[in-house]
Image (spheres, one colour):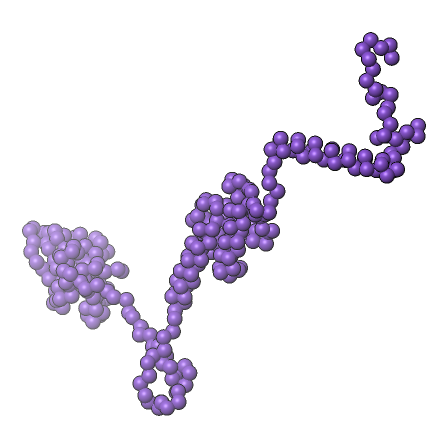
Length: 283
């Protein structure tokens, strides 16, 4: 049975060596006791019914418990009475139960590394500070936060920073966080200098998930071909055709004619269909 919290100890029951009806009766009274350890307005018949005893056995048990100062009669009216249970072992404000603590001995320098030169084994040496795994983990997280924040500044697309931080932490388990941060800075600067529009720049979280630090760097804008307008393209075409005509003219001058099946030069001789005929001609 679990005793109510207002009873500091149930050692009195063990010392009294209760058994049989006495034990049943006091267990019932303890279960019925209020915060002040008083059972109010119960009859011996009520106690007998809950204890599974006859009224005579219940009365005898109450007398024996009263003689051992485990139960005292407070007051009553008619057949109902008030009882106080374990009066000597009750406190209105029980002290909190503290968990047992175990002292941890930290090894000294001499116990770990032996006695240094010039020191005796009986000297009081300072205890060795052994870092705990929790402290190491906190330091690792702090370093990861610093590296990620520095790398995040270089990434052009500021999207889902919290998710990217989580993916960065998972990726740092397979690769050092310092190398990851360095690659993020390299690719972030390359994306910023490339001709790619910002909506074509991948988010940092998917970039890390796909391990794209092994991809080729985007081409910087300084080395990319400059976009040309339609007028520029037309002028370039005219210049290219003019250069071809000049090349053919030089070939003809040097005797390198481009002969057709009729043994005429394609560039030097005028074709009949190229002649401008007068208006009204029958040809």
